[in-house]
Image (cartoon, rainbow, N blue to C red):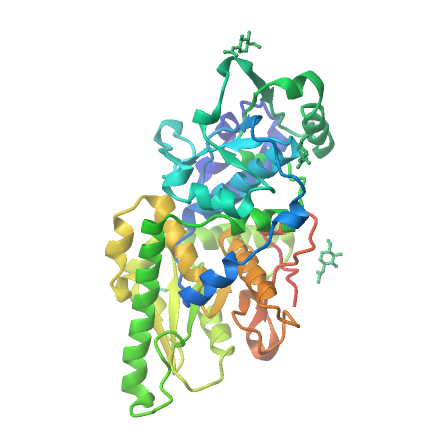
Length: 442
Ligand SMILES: *[C@@H]1O[C@H](CO)[C@@H](O)[C@H](O)[C@H]1NC(C)=O
Ligand SMILES: *[C@@H]1O[C@H](CO)[C@@H](O)[C@H](O)[C@H]1NC(C)=O
Ligand SMILES: *[C@@H]1O[C@H](CO)[C@@H](O)[C@H](O)[C@H]1NC(C)=O
Ligand SMILES: *[C@@H]1O[C@H](CO)[C@@H](O)[C@H](O)[C@H]1NC(C)=O
């Protein structure tokens, strides 16, 4: 992993020549992000129908004004790295386009996880992962995606070089955007941003704006159905095991739709442990790394009922080879990962990005989600689950009876359980979601 800390990475960041100190800092951040992305694994889920209905009921038009222009476009570089980084980068590109009052030309995502070998990045069109029309149907008026076939005059492209490095401050970045939304700059049909990946651009938008964009990202049917299959499989093992334990002949036996499960995004791989120990040292805290035992104990303290419950372990593939993560769970917990569930075959058909998208969906739908508040993957899931709770009209986000609660296992909560976790939707930037935090609401 040392290579991540090498300044050669600066090539990726637009060829900026960074002085070695700055370089170290910036690259440390980058490395953290990449590490997370690399080590990010799979996750669990539940409850399809209800979820879809709630998520897609929305009424955007009144608050979105008269929308963005559909005859002016913004083009951005290929979006790279892990699923989480790609989602954030995509949203940032959308919000940049909105600020310039332009339609975003549908960008390429990256199917694979190479970050250095640029030729191995395997571009994959956005609409091979997410529904293009659905995106515009849900988000249109706020942000808009366009196709290259909508362009009239390719000679009118203006290149806009994003700055980078220490001297490229948030203010300079903002000035550049303001400047490019006026006068002769604005006359160009297309503004093409050249330079680094949008994930590394400065952030100028509140969490709510990102959340609006994330909500419009709906997986294409084929991938959505794969997520459904994994979720059904999790419920099935729940039903089978529950029957054999104590609910036999019980007329109140839960239906397959209501049988709950917990998803735990468990980060205990050796690479993560090395990384998070360093991070703990640097941030002077002991609330980032949790051992397998600590995670099991805290998760065990969430639920005091005797009802058996399936625990879906969202773990890095390398951990699937070691059955010890399935051992040591308390009575009433039925731990599974994708190998024990028998769903590895569903994943193996797809490249990295899609595997990760299936995992994400499965985690999103879990009745209870437990993750690490220093993981971007966990943080994005909690953001979307928080949105879901808000849509349900819950009075208290943190009450005991809130459906779809989330927790951070790296922070000690009540009764030695994990800390309840909701996203602060009034936050003015995405920083704590991108880089992790132990100030979680609740
Ligand atoms: C974009 O420009 C149109 C037409 O000038 C205007 O009506 C609309 O409010 C602008 N939208 C944004 C998001 O600035
Ligand atoms: C495209 O734009 C260029 C530069 O403004 C102009 O000279 C040219 O006539 C345009 N072509 C078309 C087909 O509109
Ligand atoms: C499996 O993990 C346990 C502890 O988590 C470790 O002691 C053991 O060596 C690992 N086994 C293999 C084969 O990696
Ligand atoms: C949420 O964020 C806002 C804006 O940054 C801040 O004022 C508020 O205290 C935060 N709320 C919590 C519960 O952390």
